[in-house]
Amino acid sequence: MSAHRPATSSGEPLRVETLPTLPGLGSLYARGAASSGRIAAGRALPGLPGIGAGRGDGEPDGDQPLTLPDVALHVPGVPTANLAGHLHDYQRLLHEPVTDVLPAGYLHVLAFPLATAVMVRGDFPLPLLGMVHLANQVELHGPVRVGDLLEVRAWSENLRPHRRGVQVDLVAEVRRAGDTALVWRGVSTYLAKGFHLPWSEAENGATGPAEGEDRAPAGTWVPPLPTGRWALGPGTGRAYGAVSGDRNPIHLSALSAKAFGFPRAIAHGMYTAARALADVGHARGEAYRWTVEFAKPVLLPGAVDVAVTPSGQGFEYVGWNGGRRQKHFEGTVTPL
Image (cartoon, rainbow, N blue to C red):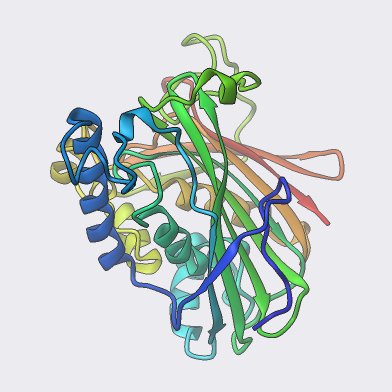
């Protein structure tokens, strides 16, 4: 086990729980559905024993502050020698060069199950189902190659208000096994609608837009000249779900997406962000900082206009619906 001790961004130390392997997303989603139902029942019936008093202290959940678990999950040995075929499938789907180097987006796919395992814990106060993906911040500090033995950690932090609920960061870090040097770090920000922090905890909380909300009134945003256009077929969500393991029904078919209020299936946010990262190309270098903020979801099938432009020491990118001038996502890639 690495000597590195995990802590939140504010310096709060975390207990470490070690798992033998990375968990499977299928079983995690089943647990997430159960925990989401328990949380919903606890909010609807706060006085019901065993549901409303879900924290085991005799007080209703609705009367308790939202508290994140003080735990970091840890998998000390994640082999990659057997991932070459899977990596190449990812690279072809995302239009990355087919090499033995794991792109930053692929490392997100690798670490995502452990971050999800944090969100389905019994002491995680927010429901996995219905969580809205707002943004990502990623740092890649050097090349990770097939054959490297990795160590992965994940935890939650920075619970704060949003005008439509609360937002939380899920942090994942990757190191080479036994090494304290960080090779990859990803911070995924999610919104849980309808939850609220006490005023004392929300005093300084300014918030941003959620996925699916316009940043400006329709027609006021003027898109740049596109540098490319993606034609995304109806199976895009299923294809990315196959390589990422993220088979959320909203991405798989029009029928399953309609059950969650979408007119058609929507593309995974991380698919669009990683595809834009690939569009930046080799100019990003071997170490870079990559950010993305999500706006309107991309309906499938559909076309996305994309612009990648130099900015300062790096690049900016944006994707939008050319017909309706609706922004889907925007971000930056900055070499380190």
